[in-house]
Image 1 (cartoon, one colour):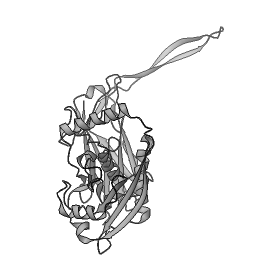
Image 2 (spheres, rainbow, N blue to C red):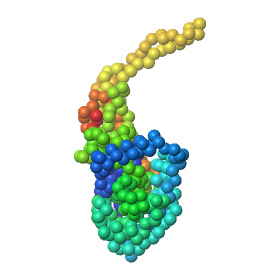
Image 3 (cartoon, rainbow, N blue to C red):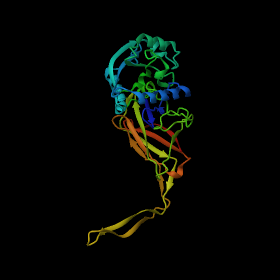
Length: 355
């Protein structure tokens, strides 16, 4: 059976909503409490104000620990791992952060591979695995890949400030299947963000301090996204982006069909155009105006109708709610079609509250 998942994102580094034909994966990193969140933001601002050395570029060496079973489940090739690092750099390089794959270690251990079951730091199996395999967290970002299918999580990474800098709890534990490969692996990208103290965009919803980052639409406790409507324009354009995986590999040529529950109606006059020309003195003048009419009652959708995933597995769709929809909930329904097998592969929806 082919395993297909779609990761939808409304902002960079934010793994918001994953839909899978067999399971749903979410981030297993616990939320940071308000006091720690505020302290982290304050520490960052002080560092930015007082830094005395050249801070760019930031080079991060990666130690990858591939845990696999005695049946070789979870064994990742070097090319697969290099693809995941490439995916991280695809997103982070624009912020002058560079990940360099320095070390790959392989460990065949059924207990470590199958039996890690929580992200709180109290799991004895994970503690044993990390303590036995980690490499110098002062100088390396450690990543462990195991089977987390029984946890409901795609991975986790405790916030960097939660542990001593040299602790083996620094670094990410990620489901081997969600480690991706190819250009667009957003699970590890997401988890690495926690290492840099980035919280989930749904952190505390609209309540201060939120996620202390004001460039991302937030997601509330009911899995509703929130999008602020531009008061200075009739339409607010926003791109919803997704990554399609098929059997653990990004999938090309998956056709998505989109439909929104919201639309608006045109008035009778769509617009007008002005006839202009040059006088004998070479001055522009307006001769007459023609109005474009006959569109009264025509419905205008707030979503494009279809799109196809590219070679990197990326699929995107533009939505365009209007000012009169402030306070409404836009439900963006989707389904996708697998051209190779000639079958519909799944469907779902994303709920966006228009603020």
